[in-house]
Every structure is written in structure tokens, then in C-alpha cells.
Length: 514
Ligand code: NAD
Image 1 (cartoon, rainbow, N blue to C red):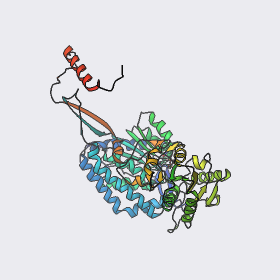
Image 2: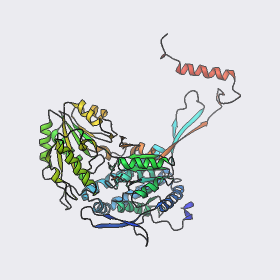
Image 3: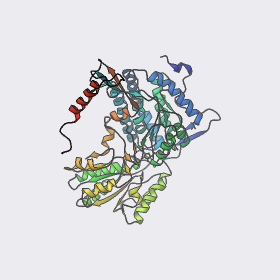
Image 4: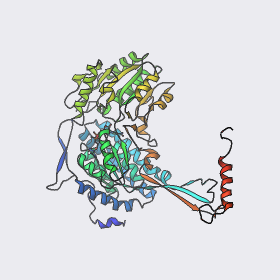
């Protein structure tokens, strides 16, 4: 394993979980109890710059490996994560508060993505022949997708494994090295990921985790990385994009959402209610692609509300093992949730489950509101809590219109026996599941990302691999061209030949009538 990385005889720790004396630190806390889970260094601009420099060195080795060699490493990493899933899930639970089973589900999905990216990178990104067309028939044309170099990844806390891995795994499989800044609420998970990959690749900093708060992320934006993949709130996404503009660093923005679930009159009401409940309440509602709004055909509205109210009985937030959902991970979000519920109630909404008293200090109990005015913040802004706003609609045109009226466009769901696909296609969002909830996230071959204020760019699938590359086009002359067009030795015969070919190819039937 020789590379310019030899310039760094002591491979840097991929994590900095044991801060040196005098280093500024921050604590990650268990949101259910307030207990300290870990103490981590705050990486300053110099630390970030050093990490990027190391990543650039490591990229010379990693980027020069064949797709098969990289796949070998990534598939080993996949197995290591799988065999230690209980360890990672426990860490994720202690930093986010989510139930262990939810942590494991999230990690399992992420593992599947690592495997998919590793196995498909060669086919998606390797050299492909492209037809040269008649004018350039003497050329052999190929396109291939080259790694950008070093990719910076900034992640959120709500799915601290799954969300950043959508960028990390795909960027790595494409041949880039990665500097990862996890959320300040889940730094331990970020450190764990980098440490395990480091074990697999013999300490070479293919993936480094730098810990810190917002300014550490901001430093990564201006560090000279070749692309910045951000997952987090829309407000921060705008700052990231502005910071990256300074060096023309391209960005992927995976931001917030306000997804709706649409229920048509022919839907299976029990299944739709079950899905809406999971979509809205799982992970305590802290899911970018979670359900926040539900639009139900007026003919089945009462039946739907009765069904979901019934199914919500016994659903409980708590810190104990028997609780279905955990605490609100980010303490400041509790005030946002409270204000959205209050605003809806003040404007005439009805709480059929929970209500303002359901919003506690650390935990929010499931809350379902009906007849929520479309202008209230519970409809227009991301609530990010275990709440649902359910409104009746006259028909599916109204459901689609209201769904598309918001500034976000991340995902969504439709329940209908006959018209699911047709309704799904009309929703302005990056992903929609029909008669299911969040199912697209578990299909590694599908692209993941939004439109509007939910961001742009795609992770996952072939699009996700290409997102972390640049397209390289090559034409190779196979034989001398019959027409010598790109030369000052061009003759009148060449020019006439071109005119003839172009007329034959493109001057045909579809033209203006005299
Ligand atoms: P956030 O925007 O507060 O923070 C995200 C990350 O950005 C953190 O690591 C934070 O330290 C960093 N950061 C903060 N200020 C920064 C700055 N000025 N420059 C660079 N980085 C900075 O978001 P969050 O609260 O961690 O996550 C929740 C949000 O993420 C929700 O809005 C949710 O919808 C969204 N999200 C989106 C997706 C998606 O795929 N679209 C997935 C998960 C979460």
C-alpha cells in the first residue's frame, strides 16, 4: 500500500474521541436523561484543513484502486457494521433516544446501501460506449464517471447512520475520500463509522470524522473539498450553499420536508391509517420524509379519523424499553412543536389524540389534529414532532393541489386501490410511495432527494453514485474521416458533404408547411 500517504507516517486517528488537554470540547447528551454520552473535540478551521489535506492524500490511493478493489473494502466494512449492529444501535439510542429496534432498522437500511453502492459502482460509473452518430461515425465514443477527489459530508442527528451514509457510501464507492462532520447531537455515531472503516483499510483516512458545532461545518464548506453533501434543515442548507459558492464548490442539499399522505375514497382505510401513524409518529416524528399532513377524501374522512384514533390508543413516548417512541432529540424543537400545535388549536383545529398538554419537556406524546387551517404553521412549516394534521378534501385534485402548495417537495404517500400511480405522478416531490410508507428509502436502486426548499441533487441509486463524480467524455479516432471538417484544409467537397448528410438526417418530413 504505497501512496503519497506515506508522507504521514502516523495515520491520523479517524476520530478524535479522546480530546487532548487544552482542546475545546463539547458533550453529546442522552436526550432521555441528560446524561453525558461522550466528550468530543471541537474541530477548528485548521483541524478541518488538515483533515481535508489528509483526505486528498488518501484519495490518491483510494481513487486509484479498481472498482472491484474498492468494493472489496466496502463490502468488508458492510460486514463489520452488520456484525456490530448491536453496538452501533446502542450508541445511536444513547445519542438520539430512539428505540433500539428503530436504530437497528435504520442501520440495516444503511448497510444495504453500502452493499448496493459497492456492487454497482463499476457498472454505473465505468466506461460505457456511446453511439457516435453518422457525422462522427469514424470516432469511438465513451463516457466514464471519475471521482471528484474529496467529498465533505455534513449530517443531521435524526438518522445519524442512514442519512449521512447515503452520501458517504456512494461517494466512497465512486472513488472519493470523505471528511464527515456529524451533527453535534450524534458525534459518537460519526466517530464509530470512521473508526470501523479505518480498521478495514489499515488506518488510511479514507473516511475521517471531524466533530464540532455549526462553525466546524461552515469551515468544511470553505475548506476546498471538491463537493459538499449536506443533509439538515433548509435554513442551514442555504447557509451551506452560500458558503460553498465562495469557492464554487458544488453542493447536494438534502433538506427539510412537510410530506403529505393522501387517502382516496377507494383506499384500504385500516392500512392507510396504520401507515399514517407510522409515518407521523415513528422516530418521534423526527423524520425528514415523515408524514406531517394527511389529506383524506371527504367520503372516508370520518372513518379514517375514527380508525387512526383507535390505532393511536396505547402509542406512547418514553425513555423505557416499552415505549414506542423516544424523546425529542434536540431540546429546542420542543418549543417549535408546541407552537405549531397551539397555533393550529387557536385557529380552530381539533385535537382527537393528544393536544397541547401532550407536549412535555423532553417527550411529546402522539398528537393528532383535524381540520387544521391551511395557513397555520402546523401545515406550512416542518414540525418535526409526533404530530399529524388531518384534513378532508373534496377530491384528489384538491389533495394534490394542497400537497403541492407548500414550499417543500421531499416525498409523500398515496393510498388508493385504483388511482395510486396517477396521483403519485402529480405530486411535486422527489419520492412517493403508493399503498406503503417510506418504502422508497429501502430500495437502494432508487434516487433519493427533493425539489423546492427540500433541496436538490440525489443520493442513492445510479444517480447517487454519479452525484459524486464528473462525467468524462472521450472520442478516439478509429479511421480517417470521410469529410475533413475540423481543419483549415477543409474543401468545398467536405462542406457540401456535410450539408448533404445534415439534410438527409434532419431536413426531412417534419417541417413548416408552405
Ligand atoms: P441542522 O440544519 O440544524 O444541522 C445539520 C448539520 O449542519 C449539523 O451537522 C450542524 O452542525 C451543521 N451546521 C449548522 N450550521 C452550519 C453552518 N453554518 N454551516 C455548515 N454546517 C452547519 O439540521 P438538524 O437539526 O441536524 O437535522 C434536522 C433537519 O434535517 C430537518 O429539517 C430534516 O428534515 C432534515 N433532514 C433532511 C433529510 C433529507 O434527506 N432531505 C434527511 C434527514 C434530515
